[in-house]
Image 1 (cartoon, rainbow, N blue to C red):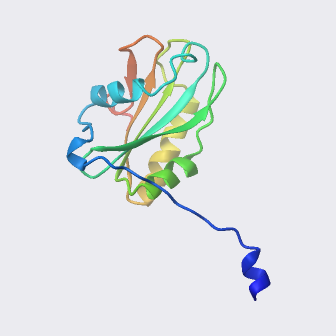
Image 2 (tube, rainbow, N blue to C red):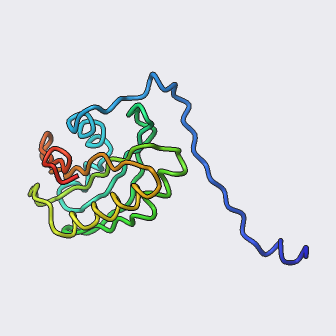
Length: 153
């Protein structure tokens, strides 16, 4: 039996947030989410490479943290819904806001953007998590598209 247990990998789940809940930013609008998330996009690649981020919130919509889900090419980025939801479970989040950049500056969601959003929405819902919004950001500061504001979520 000892031989078998030594061949099994150890799984470690870690999340540390030393901020008091009252010191964490609170998100009440898409604008709040945008201003927090936009600072986390890498400004050196925003004009030519897509990036996908997920922000996790507690039940009071205080930010628990932001996870960089993926880095893509100039016209697409892969965002695995399983990873987005797995991180939410690791940090005991209640809500998720996802965001990705469009280097072209176009804020119109593609069909792929809509499909990924709905996959994450339904996967999260199954686990009693809420996908609160999906923001598409432009390299131009202040420009974004909110799926929630447009009634898609």
